[in-house]
Image 1 (cartoon, rainbow, N blue to C red):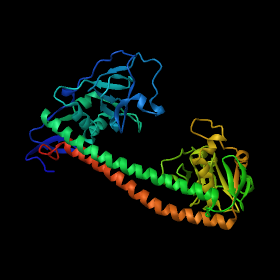
Image 2: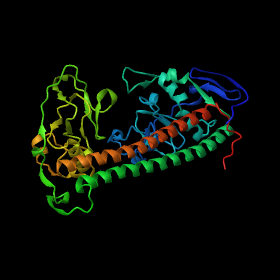
Image 3: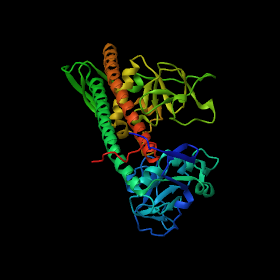
Image 4: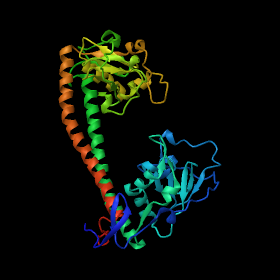
Length: 422
């Protein structure tokens, strides 16, 4: 793609130049806030950072629960521009395709006739405009900042000729459809690989490595048959719960839902206590079982020394702890913990009581077979993980390319007027 023949200074700090024939106008001269209209019978809408304006019924996020009193909710019509007053600086804005109502925490603007609504949606959600919303917001919090309309109205907004806007939309719609199609294919491949990992683990931790081994009744309702040479016991007979003291320089560790122990500095997972006094020590090789996120597979052998929250059971064993972790995570993937637990929240399993953990039944192969199972799974997973990493990196590159393409086109850094759209 080529650039335009001539450019001019934009007057926008983070966008040095724009095509010479484009207009750069004050935001306040283009967008006028719409007065609130009471229509509580209309469908609820919401705005998401990654999706723009959507129907609330399409979201399963509990953070967007509506008030019981819809009398103050605002009426939104198709092509209206919607801004979250406290989240616009992060990009929580969008042009609506729907008629509905939205929380009083939003500002509504009718779309000016000089804009194609679809072009405006691309532009107003692009980083060049989100930067304006950012510098036009004030507040002391790191998440919620309130828009200052004196600042916002004086900010600059790009306005290409309307016919050019339509060509930009046609070009981006075509390109983004192709990019999203590629991403969906890669995500399907990721899902297949993840399912393959799970299936492989489920097979060998419940049947061993010999598919023709004789089987016997186990007495375990979620796994009726086990190899003839395996035994069944309660977890308390193969695990001992530790109570290690923490050390002054211990780093905080998180037993994550991904089935890994992570350093807190490398992860945004987990809450941090006001005082280190509550934490317990962890040594490399300890088996960690999260007492509340057991259902999600937060069970792992630590590769680090450190400390962790007391809601995690830190354990030792004379068996292969990696085998035990694999077996318990497979129980999580098969939703067994949800069946045998009364969670205090919807997405928890309450195994904070060590006595309750200790009653869980587990089949135990001979130690040599446990070692062989772990070695087989680690080898198999290593190959699958390399393919997963490659696909994940490709999805990230496609996402970055999409964002850069939108930004370059809607701000006039490339000229798509001569592109073929058929």
